[in-house]
Image (tube, rainbow, N blue to C red):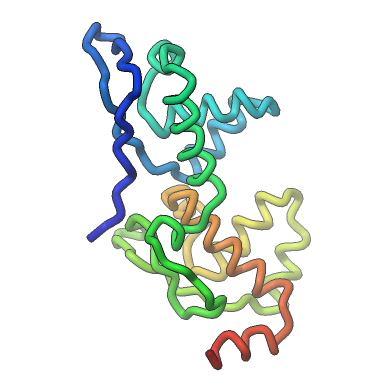
Length: 190
C-alpha cells in the first residue's frame, strides 16, 4: 500500500475562506520543485520559509493559516520539518542500514518519461561525471546533475520527487561521492 500523509485533527477549528468550518487538515507531501519555489519566494527568513511550506503541506490559504492556534501550527511545522529533512525510509517506517542498493524505493510513485516508477535504479557515478558536476555553478545545479546521472532521470523529472525521496537520494549519492570502496564492501557483507 502506498504511503499516505497524516490527517491532522485541529485542536481549534478554523473558518475556511468559504465560511465553512475546518476541523481537520489532510497533510500533503512536499515535492522537490514546489519546495524549491516556495523557499525562493520566502527568502532567507526561517519563519517565512516555514509559512510558505505550511501552505504547500496543508493546501490552506494564507488567511486560513493565520487563524491556526499555535499548537496546531507547531504540529504542521513539525510535519514540514520532517518532510524537508528526513529520507523516504523514515516515512515508510524502515531503518535503512545499507548505503548500497541497486534500487531506491520511492515514498510516492514518480511519473517520468511516460512511466510511473515506484523505485529508481541507483548507480555510482563515474569520475568523469563528478568532473562535469564540479564545473557547474551552484550547489543546486551540481546536486541535480549528479542525481539525474546516478538515477538515469532527466533533470526536469526530478521536480516530481517528494522531498523525502530527494533527501534519501542525496544521502546515498553523498556516500558515493565521499566514502572509500571499503565502506561499501562492509555494507554489502552484513
